Structures are given as C-alpha cells and as structure tokens.
Amino acid sequence: MDAIILCAGKGTRLHPITESRPKPMIPIAGKPIIEHIIEKIENHVEKIYLIVGYQKEKIIDYFKDNPKIEYILQEKQLGTGHAVLTAKNFIKGDFLVLNGDVIFEDSIDEILNYENAVSLSNVDNPENFGVIELGYDNKIINLLEKPKKEEITSNLINAGIYKLQNSVFGILENLAPSERGEIELTDALKKLIENGKLHGVELKGYWNDIGHPWDVLSANNHFLNKIISKVSGKIENTVSITGNVIIEEGAVIKPNSVIEGPAIIKSGSIVGPLAYVRPNTVLMKNTFVGNSSEIKGSIIFENTKIPHLSYVGDSIIGANCNFGCNTITANLRFDDKPVIVNIKGKPVKSVRKLGAIIGDCVKTGIQVSFMPGVKIGSNSLIGANCLIDRDIEQESFVYKKDELVITKKRN
Image 1 (cartoon, helix red, strand yellow):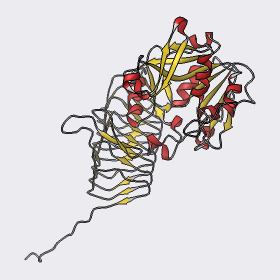
Image 2: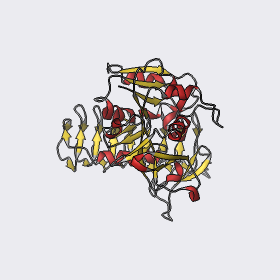
Image 3: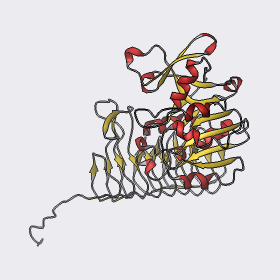
C-alpha cells in the first residue's frame, strides 16, 4: 500500500510565515508538520507520494535523502480531489491520503481495517469543519461541510486522514467542479456514503488542523510536553536548566542563562549570557538569544538574532530576522479578551495570549514594540522607536517621523 500527502497549497491564512515556505514545512516541536505525518505512516506503506506545488523546492530539498518519498507536481491547485487524481498513474492498489497540515498522536492501525474509511476527531467547534454523522457499525451516513450551528447533530469531524480503494479515482474523474470551481475529495466521499461504503474511525488523543498561527503555537506546546531531556550542547558555568530540555550538539549556552523546559535549542544556536528561555520555546538552528533577552512560548526560526534586552512572548518569528536592542512583543490585552488577528482581511478571535507573527528577513531598530496579534510581512524594515499596532505588508519600510528641536546652545 502507498500513501499520498497533499502539500501543494499556499496556506494564505498563515501569512506571513507561509510567504516563504509551504505550510507543511512549518516546524512543530523542532521539525516540520509533514515530518510528523511521515513518521506516523512510513512503517505502513511502501511509497509516499508528496503532492507538491507552492514552494515545492523547500519540501524536496528537506526530504531528498528519504528513498521512500517521491514527488508529484500539481501545477494548478484545482482542489483536493484534483490533487489526489494527479497520483492516479502511480497508485496500483488501496492507498492512504493525508492532508499535509494535520498533526495527530494516534496510530493509523484501525483505519487500515476498512476498504474505505475516514478518520474522525471530536471537537468543540464542529461548525468550522466537515461534520460527520455515524450510523450502525461505524458507517458514515452524512457529511456536512461547515454547517450552520442549528444543522449540527455531531461533534465528530473529518480529520483529514483517509484509507481508500483504487476505484475512487473513477469517482473523482467523473465529478463536476464544485461552486469554487474545484474537484473536491469530499464530493467523492459523499458518493461512497450514498453507496454505504464509507466508515468512520475516531482518533484517540491529540489532533490539530493547522489553519491559524495560534494553532501552530498550540501544537508546538503539546508536542514539547512529550519530549525527553537530552543535553548535548556546550553548557558554560552558572547556567540553570530545569524541566525537559533538548539542547543539540553545537548549541552553546553562555553563563548566567536560565533555560526552563519544555524547550528545544537546536544546533548552532547561542543563548546568553544572562538570557532567559522560558517554557514552550523552540530555537531553530543557528539562532541567537543574547544578553538579558527573554523568550517565552515562541518559535524562533533559523538564523534569527535577538541580541539583547528584548522580550518575545507567544510569538512566531521567521528566519533570518534581526532584532534591535529592546524589541518587545506584547501578548496580552488589557481587557484579557482574545487577541484579534486579521486573517485574509477579516478580524478573527484567536486566544488569550498571542504576540507577533513575523515573516522572514525582518529587521527592527532599537526600541520597537509590537502590539498583540500583529503580523509583519517578510523582508520588512521597522525603524527605531516605532510602536506597531497594525499589520505590515511584506517589503515595507516603517519609520517614525519625529522632529528634533534645538532651541539654543548651552552656556
């Protein structure tokens, strides 16, 4: 049996992080979402076909040494069903399909017992997903895509993991495009439901559909709490380490720094002196957290430098960024209400604590502050003494105009 993982989309709801990488390559607990998925299925399949498109080189380069993985290009993103169809000539028997942006704990053993099956997850907000109604013997009797609250009769939703027979390709080939003009995999599932051929298998444990920046941080927190301590880097004098912490070989923790787990500090990173890394933090490769800087509950992508007197809380900071002295991210509203984030032009309630979402190659001057939930596009420059209270598009130069007045010379 083979597997297909869908990872060709642009992930625009996760801008600015996905301005420079495909969504499945966003790191969760130190490794890409898609790597978590592959680890769950690779012992059950012979080949894994990654359906790639947007920023495909990032995926291909990362997995180039895995002999089990092959790549199929979806040149135009014309729907999930269309993505599956691109693999028709490669798949000979039954197969798995997985969305490239779901992360989960459970094994896939149970779903393999059925000819056609969909994984299910029990959630508190089913109206945001495809709601599943189960009948006798775990047969699915209905699938409602993002229904109105009054239509919801179940908290079970489509979790984006499928076991399908090869005959589903014939169904997909004969589907009419949806209202969005796309070939939808869910429309093929509805055909299987009509014929009484689709079963549902509820996942046990954690599941997350990574659709928003706060989902990234939530999943990161969850999987960090599963790590086992391993300290291989250089720990200099008077460093305090508590909790479960992974410090990779090649990382350096300088004197008087404090590391509180769970946390991961990857190779080439330098922390300190006098730095404070608080729980639920991941420092990716070659990052620098300098003198008297504090990082809490955040993901700092590779090659980013936060040198001194800065605070980053509950934030996602892209690769190759450089923060000037005393750069601060605010992460909590005065009224303690959920932070509002603009997603595709619409305000969306997120979570109680959320800092800044910053793309790649952003530089700040001294004494820059970011209000909760702001997004800063890639390759932007933020001048000294700016208070950023709104989203900034990529390739922007932001500066503050102050007039310096000299009235007279001193005697």
